[in-house]
Each structure stands twice: as C-alpha cells, then as structure tokens.
Image (cartoon, rainbow over all chains, first blue to last red; front, top):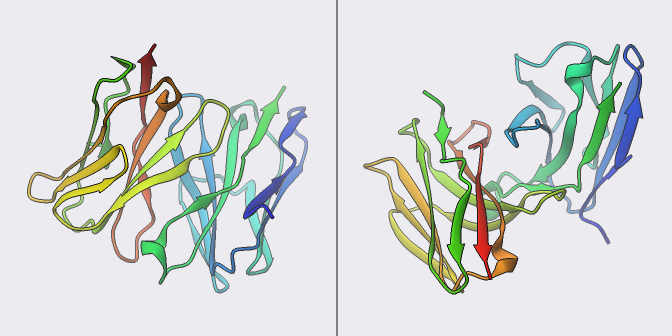
Length: 114
Length: 110
C-alpha cells in the first residue's frame, strides 16, 4: 500500500540514451511533482502537474518531459542523457487544500549516466 | 541570496543533548514552513509543519517560527543516534512551489 511509488529504483545507462521513470500515487492527491536531488543533497523542483496544468521550472532542459496520463500518474522521460543528469529523482504528490499542501515523496530513482 | 538557507553542517551532538537546526528564508510572503528528515539513501519524510509565529511541539521535536526575522528552527530534545540524518527546511508561499534548503547533516554521537 505504498503511497507514492516510482520505478525503477536504480538505473544505469549510457550517455545519449533515452529513459523513462514512472510514478504512481494512491493518495488521491491532485498535484504531482518531480524533484531532482544532486550530489550535494540540494532538492530542486523540476515540474509540478495539477489538474492538467503543467508548471515547468525554466532551468530544466527540454530533454526532460513529464507525461501525465491521469492525476494518479506522472512519468518522466529523458532524452539524450548526459553525465550531468546523474542524480536521484524523486516523485512526490500533494493535495492543495489538505495538510497545508504537505508533500509526500516516493522512494527515489537513482540515475547514473556513464 | 538563496531563497532558503541552512548551515550544511555537519552538526554533531552527544546522545541526550538538544540539537538545534536553523533556517532562514528570503521571501517575506512565505506562509508555510516544513521540516523534512532524510536518512542516507532514503526519501525525505515530513516531521514538522508550522504556519504561525511561535513554537509548535510534537514529541521530542519543536519547530519555532519568527516571521519578522524570517527564521524557522527545529529543536530535537533528548537526541538519539537514530536522529542522525539530513534535515531539510522547506518554505512555501501561496501559489508558489515548495522551496527547499540544502539541508543540515546531523550526527548524534552515542
């Protein structure tokens, strides 16, 4: 009964490849997010998706594209992977009018680009 | 100036002591304040939220907020080795995204 689940947990891939990370939440939340945490532990938002409205962090390269088939799923697709994309990617969800918009995180996907 | 600033640490305290973690933020319109704990190799988990000035206590944890000084802190009483983790301060303004600090690494020494 995991609240926010993401797959795969570990991913090692070569530069130039295209990969996807999937995320699902069963909390009934209306907003989902993708965060990137670099080696210095800095957690930075990449995207948020609320009721079909996508909010993009402008510093995110357009090689990254979120896809939300429904409000319980927000997948992250990455094209032409680069070494600097190596990081931990966290999916998260929240309900804007509940719990002060508390964000609940998935367990993370460790991406290593070689 | 970073939007949310924390001392990266590491902060070391002996078991049983009070650990004090501090955070400052730059956006005066911030309304919601959160402390997340992140164990190594794990995801962040919420431990405290605070919305109004003053103290909020939950077990061994106390969050303190001073909006005039743009300062939020977390006190951990009777620190245990299991409290050793990175503590992330996060701040939110209405209609804005949650912004995290870079975290303070806490080590509680047995």
